Amino acid sequence: MNRFVLSSRFAPLTAAMAAALLAGSLSLHAQDAGSSQPAAASNGAQSESATFSTGKKTKKRKGDEETESKKDQKVQQSKDTRAAQKKRLKQNPLADIDNDLPDKQLYDKAIVAMNKGHFDVARLDLQTMLNTYPDSQYQMRAKLAVADSWYKEGGSAALAQAEAEYKDFITFFPNVPEAAEAQMRVGDIYFRQMDKPDRDYTKAVHAQEEYRNMVQQFPQSTLVPQAKQRLREVQEVLATREAEVASYYASHENWAAAIARYQTVADTYPLYSGMDQVLIGIGDGYAAQGRFVHASKMPEGPKATLEQEFDDRAMAAYTKVVTEHAASPHVEDARDRIDALNRPQPQATQEQEQISQALEGSRSQYKLMDIAKIMVMRRPDVVQTATIGEPTMADPRPTLAPEVASFVENAYKEALSPGSVAASPKPARAVETPAAGSETPAAATSAQPGAPATPLGFNNIDSADNAGSGNSGATDLSVPAGSRAGQGSTGTGVGLEIVQPKPGEKQPTYGLKAVGNENNQPLPAAEKPAEAEDTVNDVAGQKTPAAQAATPNGKKAPKPSLDKSEESSSKTKKKKGLGKINPF
Image 1 (cartoon, helix red, strand yellow):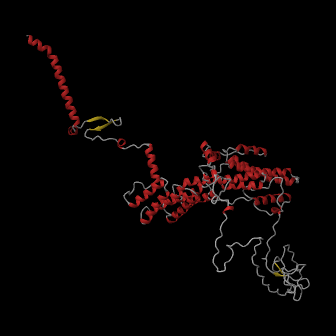
Image 2 (spheres, helix red, strand yellow; image 1 turned 180 degrees about the vertical axis):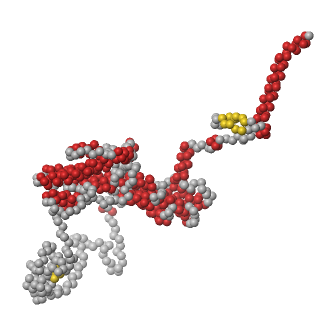
């Protein structure tokens, strides 16, 4: 009885322990089954597995082999590592290619030396490679590297040698992509030597020519956008130079020369950052000429005609600023000048405003570093160069001051006497005018004589006493053939006559004495000069030194002895006192 009671008390505890042991065995069996791949392959049910690498849960079927994602397998390089690798490939595009070849080893060695600044060593290694392996696949790159070494070395002499090397490379390899790079470098050589606009502009002109050749000869190259931007910067410098010269003439009220320079800038460099000021300068020149006509004492009819002509040209220049350069900083100045002319204000279209805003928005603004470079390094100012738009690839004919003077002169003549000037089409572009208050130069207003119908030649001139005989012997250079003196010729040219005396006639001397004897007798023979006297010692009371005296046997006289008592040299006199100690 007691035994039965005790067993009944521990029955729940025994059941609990048995259940725990059974659950542990089942969990161990489940783990073994999950880790075993064959068992998982036999079971077709799906299970969920967590990927701890990405933190995302993905559903996979049992039996599929778990693999890492591609993102985990890829090695992520840091920003500095990528920049260093990019720089290395830029310095040597053939890095890590055929490193076992001897010619490639020489090429890599030269590139490393050039990057360290050892340009002589680099050129020596490259020349060794070219001479030793003439059929190497790196021959083209080696020749380009030689030119690059001269370019990186810098200096006027090195840059001149680099230009010659680049030109030779283009000649030998005209169809390779590296030829465009060589042509780009030639333009960069002149771009580096380009000076400020108020200095010598020869380098700028050469740079413009080379960049134009780059764009035209290699239009498919990836360096074309960079070449166009450099071309815009070069043209910005050239336009600044022309505009500054025009501003100088305008400050001296020489409107003819000022408008000529301004018009040349407007026609040649349409992307110039100061185009609004250029057009305003053209308008100011014509407006000044109109004011000069208004203040002159001319008849009212011609005065009104001339004033209308010059004001219309000024208005055309101001209108171009308001419409085509609506976003420029000096557009309000142009509007004020239009109001001064009592003309209606023009309005720009929406398309013109968008184009002007895009052009002005592409220009950079001045920064402290840019100002420091311009002031310290004395480089040309290209900060506000446009970055959009096509640069000019061919220079149009420039406007000349004589053309403007001729236009103004003809305008005055036509206004004073209509029909006096032959009808000719007016220039489509603005031209120069003379300074207000100044007279037209005589050289510009003088009529040029017309060319003769027949060419000039030598013609005989009949003398007055023997007209028509043709025996005078004189020749005229100004009278055309077929025109004789006394036969109705009315030439105004200055002629040349070669006058010769007639036979038996004495040639007149016109008061001048003939050269030579009057009787034309030959001069007597020159007399033989007297022999020079012997040299005599002029110092009285002194004898000839013994060293200079000749000996009877012809031997050299003994050297005379020196009287050291009269010498003042420290070598012959003994030093006394502190002089013995002084080493000097």
